[in-house]
Image (tube, rainbow, N blue to C red; front, top):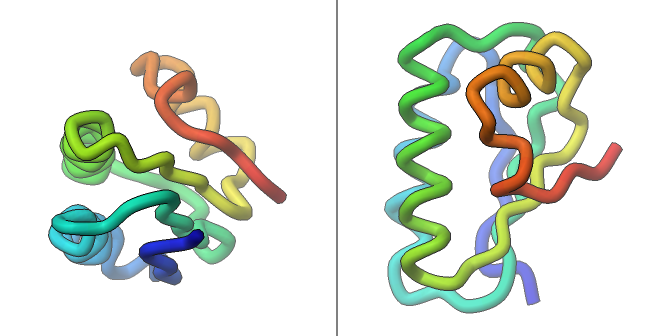
Amino acid sequence: MIAVFLNIDETRVVPALREAAEKLDGTEGEAALDFSTVRRIDSRAVRAIEELARLADEKNVKVVLRGVNVNVYKVLKLVKLTGRFSFVN
C-alpha cells in the first residue's frame, strides 16, 4: 500500500521533502517520491533526504525514489544514502 506519493519539483526539492516527511506520520507501507524532474540536488536537499530517511526508518516506512537521474544518484551514493531507499525508473 502506498501511503504517500509526491512529485518532487526541482525548484522546490527541500519543501517537498519536508512535506513528504510530515506525511509519514501515522502511515504504513510505502512512500513513493517522483524525482524525474530533479536534475541536481544541493546540500540542503541532501540534509532533507537524510532527515526523510531517518524518519522513514523510525516509522518503518519503505521509501521508493522514482526517476532518479544519474547525477542525483551519484550524490546519494557519495553520502551513503542509496542503501536507505529503493529506486525505480
